[in-house]
Amino acid sequence: MTRHLLVIGAQRCGTTYLSTLLDAHPQIAMARPSRPEPKVFLSDDLAGRGLDWYRSTYFGHATDEALLGEKSTSYLEYAEAADRAAAVLGDPLVLVQLRDPVERATSHWAFSTDAGLETRPLADVLAANLEGPLPWDPELTSVSPFAYLERGRYVDHLAPWLDRFGADLGVLLLEEMVADPGAVAALYARLGVDPGHRPDDATVPVNESRQPREPLGADLLGRLRAYFRESDRELAELLGRPLPWAARAEAEGGRA
Image (cartoon, rainbow, N blue to C red):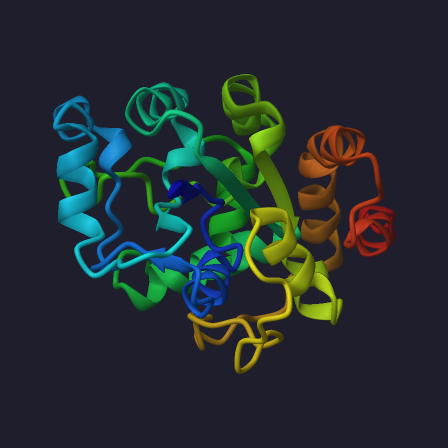
């Protein structure tokens, strides 16, 4: 029986890389077109069109794959998307990929800069974001292009998805995915597809911006680590293991 899979975020955490690993498996068909992301479950109207419309619109290329997957990284931030997805798809598998939140913030800045949405220097904009949310124009983008720090407080967004999908929700960490030779096989096994399949290159992230990023000063790094400290602690407790960026975060947080 064909089952659905959702990659719901987080933004700038290597989800495009994750999607390529999934699409490379012969038992998984990822939604097409992948850009722009489908974002079906952000809308009552689109979700209300039902499962047949969803499959015919995004999976017309699928044949006998075991999983039909969609990546829409905005889903994680919207609790109502979890309810809509459950109503249409039943019991999909759900994946969340996360990374060091400071690295995520700098990648997000580079992405927004590449897109022409951001013109402020990295250090200036992160310092400003520490003071509170940055204003943005919803007529230009469907979600804020300037939520550099808010999106890195991952546990703030995970609860409704965990409540809805429980054991069917898996949390991956980018640093572990690219460092552990067995991580891809473990992912495939978790999804119930052949873990022996080997994609061409499972260790190289894709879609990383090449925007130059100036070094952040010790004081700003310390403030950023303090901002994320409680969220990181809660995430580590949720996962039941230390975060791969914990040692770096401790060292940089101690500089403040």
